[in-house]
Image 1 (cartoon, helix red, strand yellow):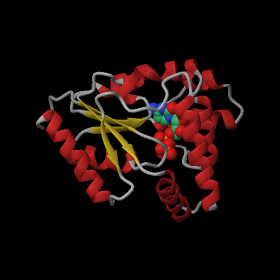
Image 2: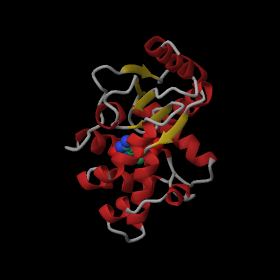
Image 3: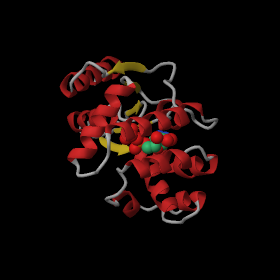
Image 4: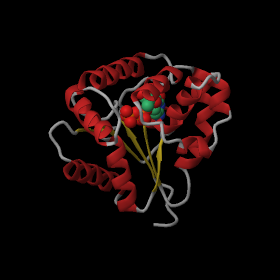
Length: 206
Ligand code: CDP
């Protein structure tokens, strides 16, 4: 598998299970994984700390992605606000495309991977779940991670971001025409990963 340049694009709304599925699939196939949401979260965090958004995106480093505070709802909101800015998105394109074509295969998850970043990806998955299920999963994730949040706050965050992400002019969240849809509302992690792997196998014969 070392010579492959297969790209797997996994998009979907907030907390749909993209991250979990992407990590599991990458591990199973021996591919590298990039959580592109982290790029926007890192820019959002810099803006919350006083930076200008476009400048923050242009000067992003690998270290910025390691910050321990990137998973909070405040940073998530800031991320979706900077993500509407065309120049911010443009500053992050080359890095994502280079990652996608790396030798050994790559899984990228985000909002616009199959539509804008990698329209020629060999496999495109669009992972969804109802807003209620997504908010409950994110609530459990945040509260077990030590963040003090209420269910209502988390649901409001998820809904506000979905709204902003789907309705922006630049690279809005939507399934690519040739994406395979996976609704995880009624699936546990193992079943969702199995469905993703089956779709990947079907498309690539890996
Ligand atoms: O983990 P979760 O699904 O909650 O969010 P994320 O993937 O970390 O993304 C945070 C925010 O970054 C999203 O709400 C989007 O506004 C933005 N984003 C984007 O615009 N394009 C991407 N490829 C990835 C994230």
